[in-house]
Image (cartoon, rainbow, N blue to C red; front, side):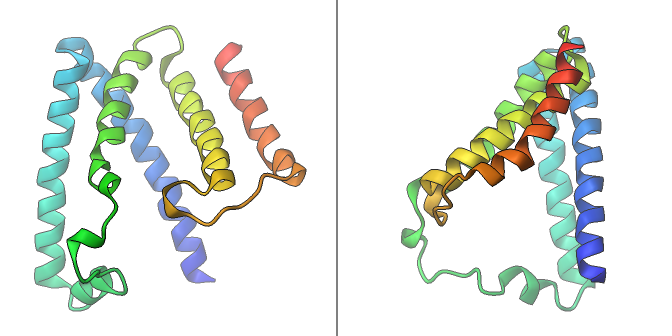
Length: 159
């Protein structure tokens, strides 16, 4: 129970950090350009990630076992070719968010548009079993879960 609550709190915190990141990067994009803002954001992110790995390795005993648990493959040739493109959506997200936040839709519209995109892509990905995931056919009960979120998003964007 405690783990479920902490996972939800971390997800909420991550959502707040996403909004903060988009706002900061859009300000940076105004001063420079969206491409330069993306380079700076990813450079700083890479440094922070390296520091977190070093801190985790040095100070937390179970860190290595936690990170490597049941995720190791025997050969890198077992990996699908597209697995190496994981940074591409993140980079495009930073660039596009830097552009759209400074447009008429603003930060709230940008975040809700991203939410709509995630929902639609998730539904299509589940339905088709993209990226090696298990197929989960779209049913009308799923529509009842999605419609309130989409409706609220459209209200934010178009009001």
